[in-house]
Image 1 (cartoon, one colour):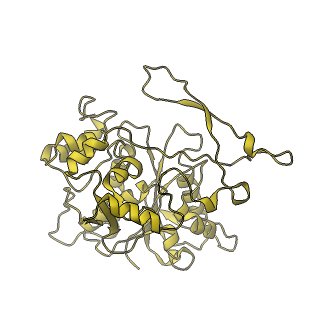
Image 2 (image 1 turned 60 degrees about the horizontal axis):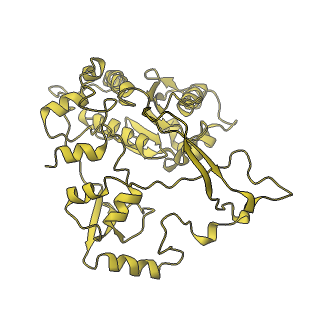
Image 3 (image 1 turned 30 degrees about the horizontal axis):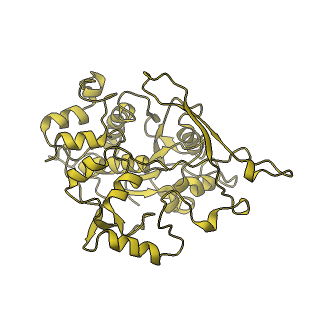
Length: 367
């Protein structure tokens, strides 16, 4: 088993990003056998008790629920047959990702830590809780937590003599390969015609095989969509009403507690700027694959670049810390140093809430 095992539970990929950040810092400390895995891809029931040091990075989704890729392992940890000494000798460190504006803030990390201790694990360091409401997002808690983590880890696994830690940001290997097709939009249209269940006209329409009360999904038109926050307030909060009369029944309610409504967003701005940035026509057809061939994406293939930017990529989201690549030493200092957070080194004129939209950042320094 590796000296340090990093396990994550991630719904949208953020916790996985943090876990990979932890792994890279472990490599920087000559812990080159450090491994990383989604919790459900790791045989928790068989191997967790054999680990020596485990770092957990988990997010909270929905109403305090565990991410999809850790639910099976979480259920495994809840088995009553596991005794209070099952994890004796295992050191754990837990970091959670959440949003303190929600009632069940970081509920998954709290529950996980409590259960690990019940099973006999010992805490390597105190639990860390990242908060999206922090001016620096989850990095406001992650950076100081990481300082404590590596101080504790190096007590267990000291650096070889003469070796120093280098946490300076580094370029990362590409994770994905992009294939540009010559036929362009015509090839995409042909793929739509040949792919069963692929709607050739609407991104929003779910496959016909999933729609209908008996299949668990039905459609409802929006009849009210009005803003309920002041126009000069930064958050646009909406009151939305749906007409579900066609799906109502005299024998059962049209919805039950726990049902969800899915909203498919589309970037209405920024797409042309992105196309200009990547120097591609919106009609260019591409395919995206994992560089190592390990993943299949829930993404049409081929797809036009315009559709990719408009419907699938969050090009207008706040920029998160890019730990391994910077264009200047100034950027490196601002983003990577914990004292930059403590001293509010970044100004509001540089970022919004100390962060930036990704697209804005790229267009500012296109080279």
